[in-house]
Amino acid sequence: MENIILLSILVLGVTALAAAIVLYLVSRKFAVEEDDKITQIDEILPQANCGGCGKAGCHDFATACAGADEAGFAGLFCPVGGMKVMEQIASVLGFSVAAKEPTIAVLRCNGTCENAPAKIEYDGVSSCRIADRVSCGQTGCPSGCLRLGDCVKACPFGALHIDKTTGIPVVDENKCTSCGACVRACPRQLFEIRAIGKDGCRVYVACRNTQKGAVARKNCKAACIACLKCTKIHSDIKVENNLSYIPDTVSAEKFGAELAQTCPTGAIICTRCGENSHV
Figure 1: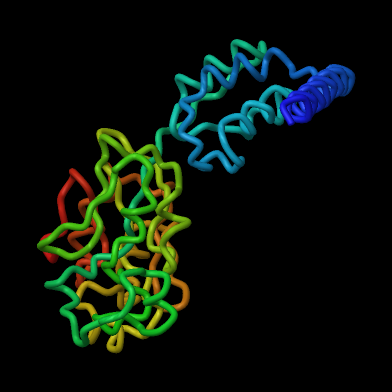
Figure 2: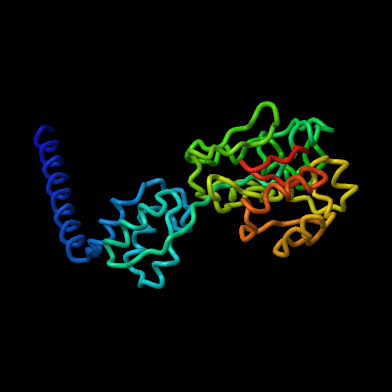
């Protein structure tokens, strides 16, 4: 009996050893040598693996950088590492990198508890994505914030929280890396990545409701009513589908305060340069 057991152990041991040797030889024969530059770049990257660069993760981004020519490299950017990281990567590749203005996530909704009081009570799963499929939301606005925090859960840097007073998400400028996780998480596309602006000065329309003015205001008193007053201040501002949009080409420093003060509903917000008195 003991001999049978010892023989079984010996056979298993030899089989395992043979398999290990075969696997080792196969791995050596078919091994793919990785470019040293990929390893160097990977070590420079923040390893957030957030997908903000449009790649599957930091290693995938490093591979893309190492395989790109100078023109292709110009189209790659790590939002978490920013210019500092891109400059280090460029030095590894022997490329130059053009300066890029820092960006930040902006919530294009001002449907606070005060501006858009709840009309119904949602008693379903605490998920914006699910709530968006089954109802128009507690406020009745088909485009407004659902206040359930999918964006907060999705943010890998803790740069978002729901304000208990307003009920809507707040972006922490010191933590936001503009990775775009909130943009992808929000089912109503309320987040936008915009230029951070000089000294944090930005101007934008905090509304996505395309309903006609009177209907939109029934759901939120801070809704855009497509009054066109903002378009008279700057020619780059357009109103389409009953909704105004202010691009980054409009200087917040020069026009922000005027735009915010001219908006009759408080849909336009200017940060740090004349907050809208309607808000």
